[in-house]
Image (cartoon, rainbow, N blue to C red; front, side, top):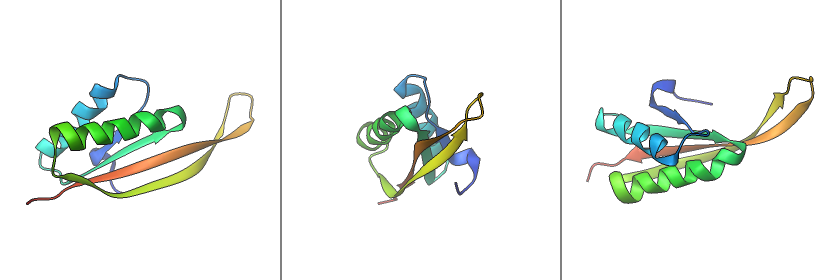
Length: 95
């Protein structure tokens, strides 16, 4: 987990367009890099968010890099489970 959290959109259970709006707002505020992060079942939604941003709202945003990893989480009973995570770094290129 890198960069600062003000450019980061954490994808979870809300509707997809909520996260798209949050990321587009970051780009419109002058940020040239937005990081979309998700874990587990939300990974596919994070990919959808990145693609909607690129194809509909910010056509000059390109994926700079994509990082995948596995995080170890401890539940309430004290058992640890592995959860996949993804970070998609979208950078706005000025043409």
